Length: 625
Image 1 (cartoon, rainbow, N blue to C red):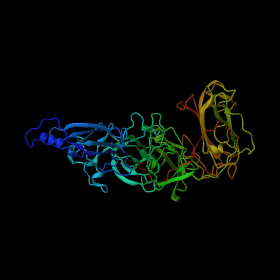
Image 2: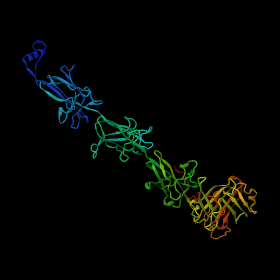
Image 3: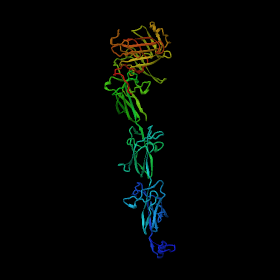
């Protein structure tokens, strides 16, 4: 391109530029004009070079300045990239008089910055680099020679992306970030490029917490692309369940519970994605104690020692989860458990094969559930244990004792009934010492005493029959095995104890005066206690007088010495009647002896199991808890 040299200025002194231009015009010497351009693009990887996959940027303002005086450049013209006939990202100033020029890029898209300047791009060199000063947006001053078309003045821009943001303790295990649930510092977080899902690339690693907020992390300066985050599970925790939370994606947990990874997701140019979170659940514990229940009351008392070497199984949904053994102090513990339903099974070692589990779920005072025994008397299994989020259960215990060997049978029996009015279950028992097995239960709540050995006389005592005066009741009833006591069929030897408040229905003329002196028939209330061992077992020699040497004539149950359970002896009984309606009243009548086929009758409701025991587990000691 050329033009004549023209000037309206008058000629000056020789050598003056105006004179040269005037001379040029006068001589009609042609001048070739110049041009400058070229391109603005999104430098997504921020390397300062135009890559094949990086896109042009339209809408950027480009100003051209004459920089003959570098201290005070003079504005020449302006364009907008991609406007009009220009290609995407392009600008182009032509018809320029040769001289010194610079280009200024302004009006970038919101949040965008200039990339690195003057990088050694391969391939392409200067045609592929960015020439804009990152601070001013201007290029250096360049000289355009006549006819020169310089398309090397480019500008790369970028906007930083980011990915975060939070790891927290999910206190209620609902998979959502709730008010008051704290962040957790010190959790390792990896960032992966997953553009090739078959071969993800680790890009960066951070740890939650400072300089971020508690539990926070953020990977910054990320170009557009495909990424996932992996959280490294800290000891003592599990990942919560991913959830669609009502407050949106920024409040849920995105970590796969098995791998700790989020899904692979695309990050757009300049996008700050703060929705990549992980909720953690604190793993739980179940424990804790197996002990020798010396007094057989089902409660851990001071001085009762722990039992070592007891096998303890943990079950869930019918599957074995873990197995532990109690230590020297009787302690065991299962750790690292998720919330859910479990059962514990206690298995005694061979050296304790002659021991049994003590009473279950007693109302222990003090201590409550932390001091009772939870093992089933027959199977050693506990009830189902519901582990609630955030709550350990260290109350699962088992007490054991060594029972006396027994092998006799009992007659009589009990029936289960359901009181619809009261909504409770009751048991009605009946029977007679030495009676045939098929004997029907006698009237409920009444017993008759006519004895062979002891004070003469007989009487019938009310204890809860329909004909008894108001207030008559059975206060407690104990049986060595409630499972057998409820059935009118042969069973191992049993002891039955019962007590309560009642009145006398009738009295024979020869009733002992110690009774008659305190009794108004059907009116006076008295506290009574009855204990019978080996009910229905007549003994091998019938009427035994005196009793065999192996039978302890002074033995009796609940309020006295050891219970009897010897099949060589006839049935042993004990009756005690108090002058008043409580067991703190003075005793007016007490008798004990043997029944060898007599007619001692019992008809109270049965209750909890009661066994005859000995204490020979090797001494007593501290519980070790």
